[in-house]
Length: 324
Image 1 (cartoon, rainbow, N blue to C red):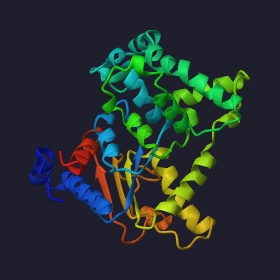
Image 2 (image 1 turned 45 degrees about the horizontal axis):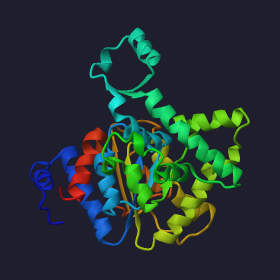
Image 3 (image 1 turned 120 degrees about the horizontal axis):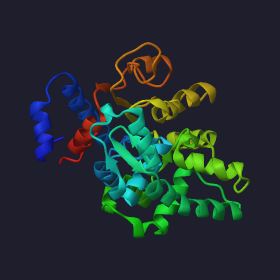
Image 4 (image 1 turned 180 degrees about the vertical axis):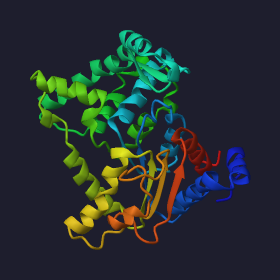
């Protein structure tokens, strides 16, 4: 693309070799995909929401630079937690030096640490719990079932959280996604805080597990979405590794091999940002070519891997795509 933004021009001028060059190549490949009519899946692993990726990712959503998201349950909820409890977060720049006793002291203060940032239990977790439980129970009373992200959309769009907002709503990627009713896949949602809370209500007999749609239903939903949207290709932009990436990328070999739909196209683009260097037996540390053997990527699929910190790289790529 022809860049005019100051940051985009800076990246093109100075990011010329090694991981910097891979960043530019991946960004241009992403742009080529969108220009050719392909759609893009972005997967979010790690704690990208607590890293406040929403400040720029929300704009990517508003500008139609992403058409479907796969994220961990933590990223789904932590964007909303940041929205309603931002001023209560505490940063711990010297987190590498904390003793076990200092970590215990944070726990007793209700502060759950994510690297250098502590999420406040009372203002974040419990504030969401108070309202989401009512939505869960109302759905169950009506005999309705929804996916985890759909319940979160209902929570955001109901307006019940507005009194707690502590950041600009434009900086919440979940709110931007809710406004567009963007499809989201949340594999392994059960291991998130809200997933744990939902499970506790099931254990107490106050909710049925079936009120929450399952991971298998997410996979079948994704299979239908992929089938209906892959005419011009679907790219895969993976931030981090783990289940947020491995779950959705498997939909292609499932359709091709298990459903025997041999006309299913491979993913048309692949990029992963990861600080996992190539290693033995690691999904996050596997080079993209390994995915060819699993029927996920084609020989000619544009493939990029940027071995760096996603909190640094992802905002730069998004800034380039947004021509900032």
